[in-house]
Length: 54
Image (cartoon, rainbow, N blue to C red; front, side, top):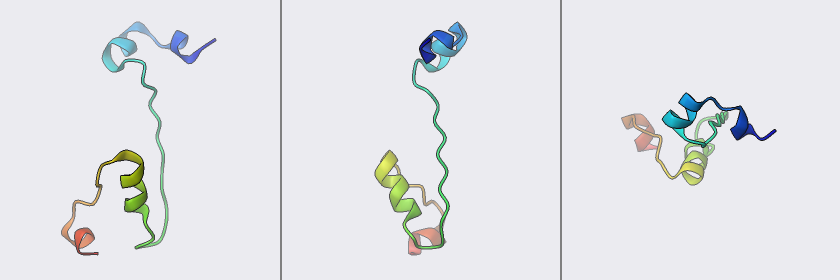
């Protein structure tokens, strides 16, 4: 059975067929976590002034 066949109709109407994937990152300060996320998603995740100074 394909995963699409198990989705309820309301879910397909609201979200479509795109599966939700959660990925976590862990690492020490200044080891490239934000750069990795930017490369994978195309969005910059640093929003605080201290993060932007680095």
